[in-house]
Length: 302
Ligand SMILES: Nc1ncnc2c1ncn2[C@@H]1O[C@H](COP(=O)(O)OP(=O)(O)O)[C@@H](O)[C@H]1O
Ligand SMILES: [Mg+2]
Image (cartoon, rainbow, N blue to C red):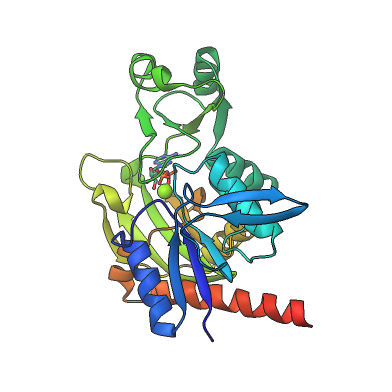
């Protein structure tokens, strides 16, 4: 059966996750293709919702929204369009809307009783300094609500540093997270891949020297890690609360073994994870997406 799997992305097919997802689709005998969110447009006309664009010959059976940090209202509208047209999404509009914003994510996780680093969400200079006081002083992490690969995550050492590096970039309408800093030498960074409510694999990331961010793209060492019994429900819970069928959950474990969820990625990269674990992660994602389509079809026919 020729299942059509659309991947919403602004990157081309050489970009690692795209290349691997397309390869995996081909391997299963499905038709995978990229959907550029700025070349396909939602249309609401004559009482119907459709999509229009010269590049799409037929509607996908299932869609993977994978535009990263640059995702904006336009792409979210396209995702919502597919959803309202009855095309299953991995992940859906609600999940992407929350996961793309690190503070909305933290709100949802905290409300569900899941652990996150203490954070004050501020929108002006006085809020920043008030937030630092609330958190017990410097250093703090200043974090943009959207960003990836460590971009927009700063360790701020004192008020001067804040004025020079954090406050100039402060956009009142977007806000900024001021977060308790978890010292790099007294913690472990984990990336956990969750698909369909189950942990597929986990890896530990060790920041390169002089760096406090453990992102793979910043040159961190990555190695496969076993997930303890305590951490598994936290990773799965984080994905579930945000509503992600596929999620890369970033967890920091402090020196006292306390876990803190720092991020739920709705379109996780998996180059490092595939290299570290030897697993065919692209295959798992495509397999899940195809299942989603089959369930959807059965529901519609049944
Ligand atoms: N509160 C914190 N204290 C110390 N390090 C942090 C904190 N928050 C994030 N980091 C480090 O910075 C990295 C990037 O932060 P994250 O919130 O995951 O944003 P990104 O979307 O850029 O990956 C994390 O993987 C972690 O290593
Ligand atoms: Mg991260």
